[in-house]
Length: 166
Image: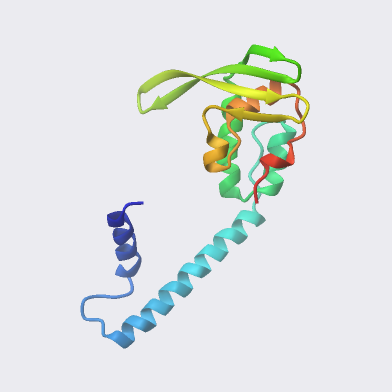
């Protein structure tokens, strides 16, 4: 978020509470009220997240595990990756003992522009450790569809704990 975006966000937040003729005491009271309302809204959203269950889109036990552990907001992001697995078909590039390397061709779409991108996934069969060149898990903590597709092609049904973040 840029400095300008941050200022605009704060301005929008306070617009309904203060105006140019607000004195200091009113400002402090309104500021306190605004923060209380913001905290109440966040608490309500968190409660809603844990009291309402989003249905799984697949029969994958991995998706079910994410559904049980994550908030609805985080689960929706993971679910987008689960949906994307359907279109992927990893191809085995190399196999050296327990280490396998896969190429996963995926479509990258921005508005009406579509580009085919090939990602590489390194997978260790022994400890079920995978790393994708897209870096989604390292950057955002969300297991990418490329790794999920490799898990599926290797018949991995149980999600290793290292892929479940607090």
